[in-house]
Amino acid sequence: MKFRNFLFLVLATGMPFFLYYIIPRLIKITTVECYSQYGPCSPRLSQVIRIDQVINYASAKKLYSQKLRQITIVEEYTLRYKFPSTLEIYTIELKPIYGLKSMLEQGIANISGKGLVLSYADETNLPILAINTQLPDEGTYLEDDTRNAMEILFSVTQLYKVNTASLNDDNIEILLDNGTSLIFPLDKDRKYLIGSMVLIMDELERMKEENEKDVGGLVKTVDLRFENPVIKY
Image (cartoon, rainbow, N blue to C red):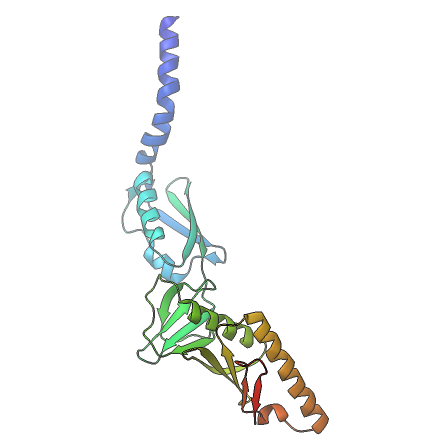
């Protein structure tokens, strides 16, 4: 009876150790599958996490956890084992919504909605803000003024076709496709500025319809840096 109790105690205390520490070191991983909230992981991420050799499950979890923590575009991740020899990786990937271009160097920085520099590219279809300083490093966040300018640009692109946008010392200047230049300060509430812009542009559109001519296209500048916006023809 004592022997049975002893054997039960050994098994009860040893089994968790065996399952947690020994089994993961016996399982061999030969395949890695990667998924994001959009489906298969992006080519960039898939390239980074590809498996080059057979390793055990414990080592695979440690290795890929280290890799995933170093990849800027990965916000969250989960690792799972799939029988018989596959490591499944589920990620939440950050997607860029802005592009940042420097007048001093080549390339475009892809920026997330939170102002994080995700990667670099030669070209992009995203709204692009031009700056006259060096591009920030990957994995860093934009300064407040640059981020504010990006958010203003993004809001404008949701309403009108934008040609170019540039960041100056204390303002952002956005040139629309119709030739009108919009100038926004960086120290005022973005929603207030966008609301003021919409009211002005709607009024110009009304004047265009009443006068049967493109008043909006004749307006060269709408400057919202002042309490009373300045319109120049």
